[in-house]
Length: 298
Image (tube, rainbow, N blue to C red; front, side, top):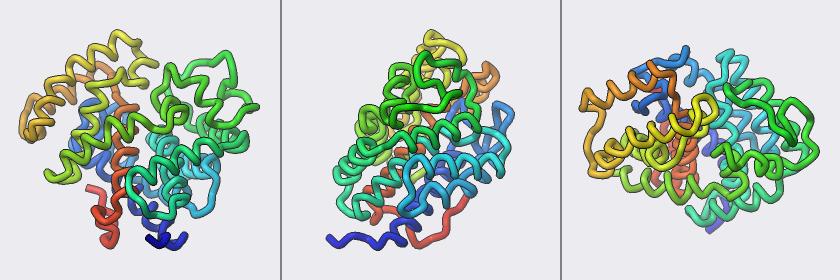
């Protein structure tokens, strides 16, 4: 199969990123901001503006991963003035670079192989650019690290820097292990639910993550015990989602969403991973994506 021209790959990647971010706020994901439910001092428009600002830089043809991250986060900050999408950008930049590297063809396994190649080729310049982006975004609960702290210029490449945090941060874990949560956990759930529509697929992926993994964002801010409690709360909803039930029709689902927000609990890492899954699904199976239609924010 012939490779897709670079300019077309970049444009498809931009549109796929916008659609994944649109799904992020279209569907109710308990504890996260959505069109149906603001939270944590943010509303859906913050995320819409962030996605629109970041889409061009993060999909820029030929750009190194670190540059994609830094320019996208700077554009986001100018648009929203808050950290809405640092995790999304950190996860999606290597995926879009991998799609470009793979030639835009070959399916899930080709994309996964290209992700591994991209991660293995990361440089110290990528790390320095990503550190500048993280410093600008100022994510909550980050704390200090004994080695290669984000307050200082790194001296190792970006994958090596992420490896130092992989035991406490699930986004860093993806960099070290070549995105196993995206490809082995979230993507199967997304694809299995996609016949019910992209929104339900996104919700299924989110529930898979929040019911299976202690959310890194919750752990950083509230501790592992609280994160484990959220897993227990999520398990029955994941089961119902796997059975194909329409959870948005159950008032209890909305109540759980509001209760998490009232407790200040935001499964933000699970949401970020879900956006990466939606993007990976589009990049790996572009024939299933509506590439010709302009992206919509709902």
